Length: 214
Length: 151
Ligand SMILES: [Zn+2]
Image (cartoon, rainbow over all chains, first blue to last red; front, side, top):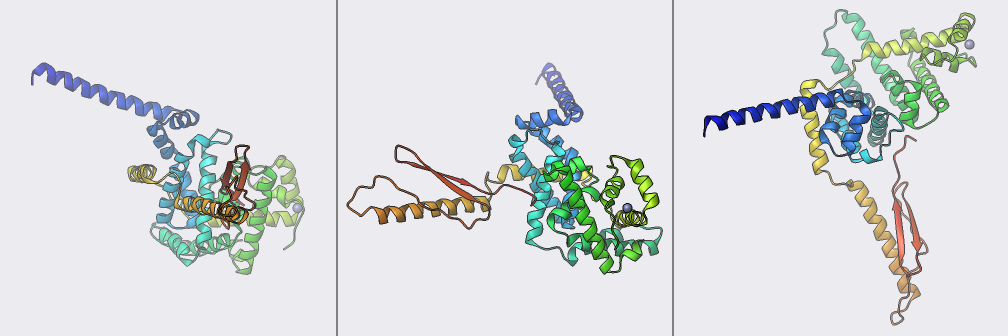
């Protein structure tokens, strides 16, 4: 092979790397609407960027529903697979994040129906807490117990109320975003949230946890 | 537990969504019931915050996470087994009903002019079956499965 050819291949390689870098930068800088449009047009790398951006929202919501990291991981992957297959149906009426969280909530609700949450879920939460170093061990034990009690109470809520509570308290969504995810009015969001909180308080009171909290 | 008719408004205030936050602040100063409710809301939120960490998929795990999605997109059939099963059983039910009616209504040596479907049912939750006869004697059977909802 001649030297001229080697040099040419070297420059081709550099050009490809540069193109790749530019392409990644373009994806990284693109806004949500553009990425969705590209993904809808079949650009897989645009969909991958959307997964990168929203993976933690989807994973956190799945985890808060299922209380198990492995299941949440698998569920999140299934949510994105489902989203990819349904991309054409997304028309941008709600934000892409709301749309994804809606798919997640529906998917988790189905799984939740299949197996009612039990002690395993809380064990996962406690195990997670026990792995993190804590400068105040006494306080940690107390908050762990409270956390377990709150989680048990949340698991007893009806699906609609539980979803509303989780979207607000765990995901920090606004009422408007919650309405998009649950496809209901703002009034219904407030009503579901109110019922969830009231039921939660009653359960915590019955278990004698409220005094601990106050 | 005592209640006040303004607890909904206090909740909206607590969530940063009150239309008139100043009014709620003034009400909280006057109403012991709502003050107690507000402190309960805070206590539950603090209890949640103290007892959990938000799990996340770290950047080094992303490739593994994405490869599972890419595999799923490539491998998974367009319709899930559950959906396929539902479709198959619905179509089978529709065909059986059609054939049963054809044999009942039209004896063996009489030409069959058309198959009239009088009823189709399914025990698949939320699915509907409609049919539309046309002038040329054929019938379109339209099967819809339940959509997602949070009900
Ligand atoms: Zn009041």
